[in-house]
Length: 261
Image (spheres, helix red, strand yellow):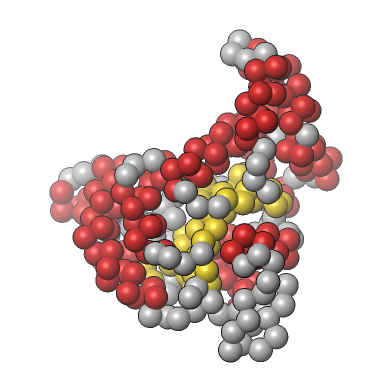
């Protein structure tokens, strides 16, 4: 039975790029994996998907036929995936692979926070073990209140999809060492993050430090792994975190020789 890795995050956080790099990482370590494109509206992909929902529903074709705008067509397309879900699931499971990397739609709010998205994932994954990777753009997270917003969104996504979650801090190659250290310190230390948020002028209009600390106590529950899709930095740690969730730390031994971290 495969392990499902569901890649999530806001538009521009690096979902498609991370999906591609993770697939390369797994295959280079003799771990068989496939890529599933679950975005019916995407135009270009940096990888060749093994399963592509655009073969079942194409949002851009739907726009041409119905006159719907981009968001309306994406909503309708995701809803229409349920009409083809058994065929999509059968195609995915026919690969008999170790890992299934699911690249979710760029507009994750439309996917995760409407009823259809969770239903699609549940139907595809079935009884297999799964983990979600919630991507947080490190260049966005430099501002403390932005980081809090990202953590809130990660928690909301976890509640909606009901699968274990790992936060992946992406684009770390774009930060200097001091900026990256500061973001990681805020993630590791809720008191520091709450103090920095409370000191922001706009944030003071909404929260005081005690209120922020109370919120963060409930949010800092997911492991966060810093990664670069450009250099590949952090993917050893990301793979290890995935294994801790889906396999209790054990490598997924298959017919491929010598799977390693």
